[in-house]
Image (cartoon, rainbow, N blue to C red; front, side, top):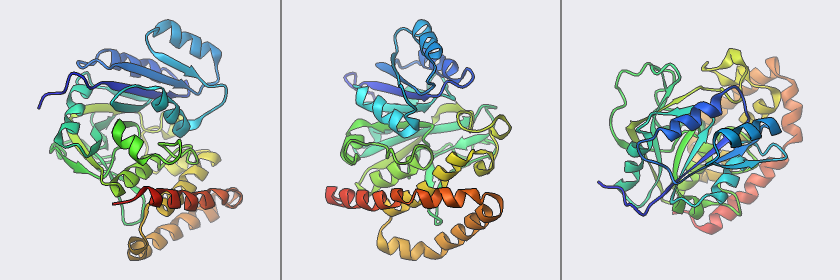
Length: 319
């Protein structure tokens, strides 16, 4: 399968300016065997010195320095709107790509016109531990990263269909993004962080789009590098290492995703799993994070917004 020469790839990176993550990410893009058409960086650092340093070191990139923190979802939306590519690779700044990543990953789109998402094999920064071999939806209505935390022993070397792609290294067909956007949003800006990848994958699936996994496309991800404390990097059970606002996003966004995307029949069938998960989560919050309860109650407006968006999505026409 040969890649059409008239198809172009845009890369969108959201950064908050931590450590040297962005530098490593951009350098890995420069070394790709398949050059990209454009690289767009959305700078959420609110640091003019950081922005100036990016411009000086990488004059060929398109840089948008936001005067306010757009958070991850709105930053990606901004970058996608600025881009011209037929295919959009959305990256966390704490990701480094193997030099053949794009060459391999773009093959996934050739398996059919309804392939809207492609994932490679995402490893941790040690190069030995799997971070994600594709995103899946669990009975508890949470996101499952296949292979998460396991040693890479070649157990995920088959090219195959998957539910969706991990948000840290998410390759999308623009046609799909345009088809499933709600209003002006590709990613739901109510989310800020977390679950945005499951939300977009679930919505895409309901519109007839598919995800595909290409293990030969390898990337390396510092799990939690952009949002966790140093002690929590690459550790399991992310909830323990997040500040209160991020914990709120993790909590509310699962409900937003479920409200917007699950069918009524599917919800009823999975209700025992959903309730069992919720009981564990709320017991944890009650005893260890009680201040989160008040924050959640003060943000119930997002649940109302999710029901309104569900109606808009249904008008667009699920398959």
